[in-house]
Length: 321
Ligand code: SF4
Picture 1 (tube, helix red, strand yellow):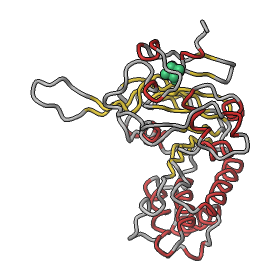
Picture 2: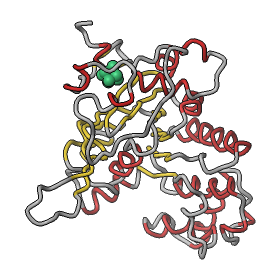
Picture 3: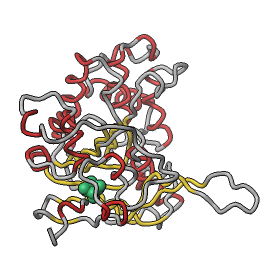
Picture 4: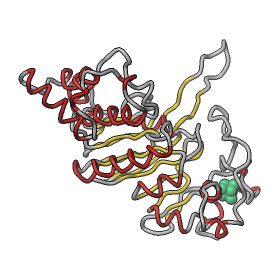
């Protein structure tokens, strides 16, 4: 479904006279695979490049190097109508249901807009039918189609955002922290809705989140991202029962769990994510890692396959050790 190879997304900074060109390396050599009807969790702290990666897939962030293939077709090698048609199959659900909907548009207008752009109806009646059916498919009352976003609760607004993402019958939805702005009591309802939709529509999700606990209950596989790179990837069960990278261990340690004792040797995460403008040399995690050695400060570890589905980039797990 989705294949990303060595993707780099750099933002150039304004250049001073005679100064060397500088870049914010938001995504720095990411390779990922996502299968049909699969949910891949992309986790990490804020500032790790997760959202930029999602935006690059949608063509909303620069692709400096590397490639993105969707259903076997190279997104970077296409333009015009071909790209327009391909991108139609990839949609996004945004983090904030309060700001992602135009407050001056009714729900009917919001859901009708993508149908209008892609001319997906042959009569006004069919258009309205589609809008009502989209609302009902996410558990909204279609008799409220003429209402404005402010007349709905946060959870209902996120349902509108999901209905809008579904309007073009996508094959892949990028969910960017889809429940983090919602009350805890509403979060489970939205997650359950996304799971139901996946089973019904056979959609794949790239599920971006800072919350490993949420990813554990939602995703099939997980990729842990730190400062623009994937540091560990595997089936959720593997990464949960045997987290290998010290960053993954620290993230798990922050999750309230009965199994906390198991990871008691993992230290809590100290400090903040360094700037992607000037990443630390060697392993980018070394300034925060309790196991850092001279080698870690000198060289970036290559990714090692631990099993057919589990890989990690850490000198503690290189083949020579
Ligand atoms: Fe820590 Fe070294 Fe592994 Fe980086 S490579 S996570 S610094 S042990």
